[in-house]
Image 1 (cartoon, one colour):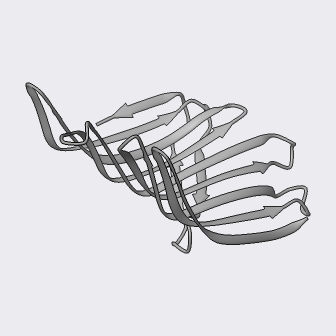
Image 2: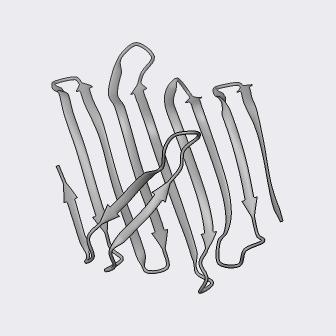
Length: 163
């Protein structure tokens, strides 16, 4: 099977709202490159006053050897958590690439983070995380919407790095 469909989703149930432009692509014709991909651009999810927005992609592929690989990508991520009057956590400029394979996890993520809780204020910090538990070098392309491909490249070996 080979196909795709796209549409704009808007939902507004009590306490939850979701909006965005979504595309679903399916290709089961080529045994060496089977995939199901769901991507959303300008996605905005609000639950109980907490908001998550950005561009997202989730893809499941089947390798030639029959293994399942899941890729997740996010760009333009924002997240705000608070009590309706005060914002306690604000994440902006987030981007990340996550690869879940039969041999482990590989990931790279970056975001600006601000924390403001009574007695503690952290502003202007950029958090960077890189993880590779696969013991293999990683080089995977990720497509989000109509953007140019982004690549997750990590050296072999079990490692994690936080900045």
